[in-house]
Length: 399
Ligand SMILES: [Zn+2]
Image 1 (spheres, rainbow, N blue to C red):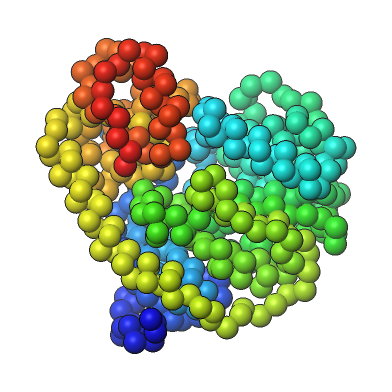
Image 2 (image 1 turned 135 degrees about the vertical axis):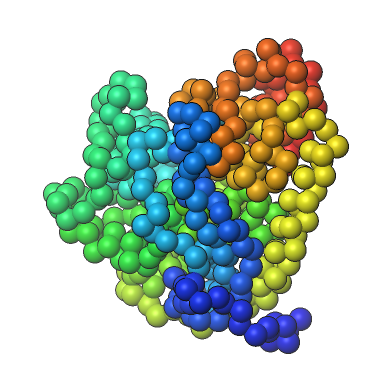
């Protein structure tokens, strides 16, 4: 199929970003639009009222026909302010911990991290770095403005800094610099990567590990609940590789992980390159073209599904990005009884936008629940086990 035959007139609205943040191309295809998404979907609120008054922003997905990058061209960085209420730790789930264990073991096998220095940029609550250092015998320094000092005991060999990894930390010489689930939040991903590359503590031998959500999973497998305001960028394998190479890195290894939901690149400093000419991106472009319709159909399906039941007797399992997006995108989902989450720091709080309460699994015992909607198929088995152990009799479906 020749993509050129399907070219439409550019429909990019005024005020939107008109250039791809990765390759600079202006050949953009508009896709899904939302007028009001909560700008911080992982910041849960202390009351339903403040949750309903949460700040929102416009989302206009644009697809770059040159490097296959998908991004929110209506993103306004000044709307976002990450705070310590930003809670996105997944380390309460055994399924996720098993993934992290595999990852740290693989990195250790490849780069022999015992006694080495690891810097984790955007370390969140520090769970990944603590596990990496504990299992590999590395020394770790985590940087994140949302890090909370008081979560658990201080682990030996690991320290955390509530700051950006800037030139003030020139004395830190990381052997491995990890940066997981950060680049997709940044309005200027190239500038961000170039700043990391240019940090005075970086040398030719420094290995970088980058990990981001996989846009192909969103487009091909219709993981539409991953479209959130915090994520400016939705990288494909091609656009992530382009970003890393243009920023001056040499790619050592690249692939997908966590059931194809994540993309990773291992790299080291190299020569800067110009963005490559468009490669054969027809397949991804076809998916991008179909995405707006497929997205609408999936929302309609879940609206019908809830309409055929009692939404109040339905709960959503997972109060992360996907669950919060589900209750905000599917109109009837605003009426579901609760969001269930195993993360104790989320329980007792409320979802931005709809004000849906977040409860512990044990709270299902006191409720009349017909249906449990699971937000990520990878956790279905784990959740079914918890539900069975509680003795709750409800249908479990995956959104
Ligand atoms: Zn591009």
